[in-house]
Image 1 (cartoon, rainbow, N blue to C red):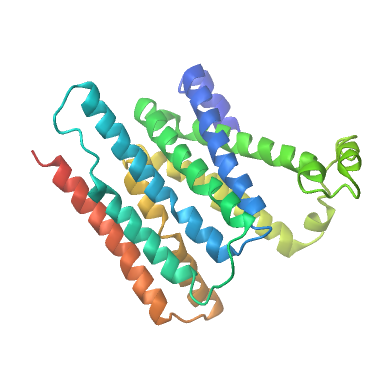
Image 2: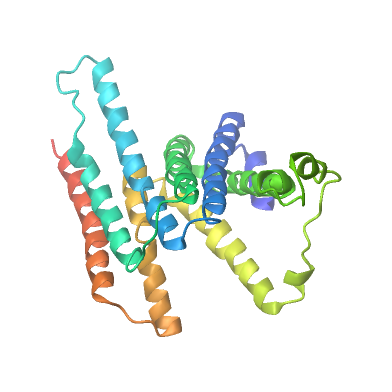
Length: 278
């Protein structure tokens, strides 16, 4: 994007920052690809709950990093504090109550593949926090690089899908042969439909590009542990949007889940304030 090129010319982003942004984008792409493959055999509600585990993963990483630092300094207080993970666990419980009402079924391979989400997104948050601490002015180019990496990974997945998904119409050799020549995505059905085109533009520009840029700006001031818990409120906004636009109603489980998620955010803030006190 033009803003990213201008930022590079101003020196707002250097090679190390660009490399870090590419690594961050790779982790995000890993999470998205796991989500895509997982949804082939699991439900959206299960995938959502598994994805929300990113806040537990990030909290555990942050606490392990803190304890490792104390060990290196020879501190006697180098103990893993499980209480720091409690807000994340409460948030996941809230998401599960909102999303899994009435859900049933045996575990699937898709459930396992969906665990790429908390790992990929969680490591992406940790990497982004480090980038924004070092170069807070590079939010736009970092976001642009992340989007380019995700887009490249998505295109590679599309090209390799006959081999990965077995859609080449035959055995392994036939699926491999279907990889050549490279295919060009058929955008005609999207372009010819105003509804589809509007949806693609909205999800691409607003919920992806703009959201990633705002996320990068927010990570200048909010640690990854708190940000990951805040991001767990996504089902609440989805439920509110459904109620506003589609006339859906809130049930008792929605209110209980919302209370737990909001309570997790408050608990995380209280822990942060307690840690900041001398």
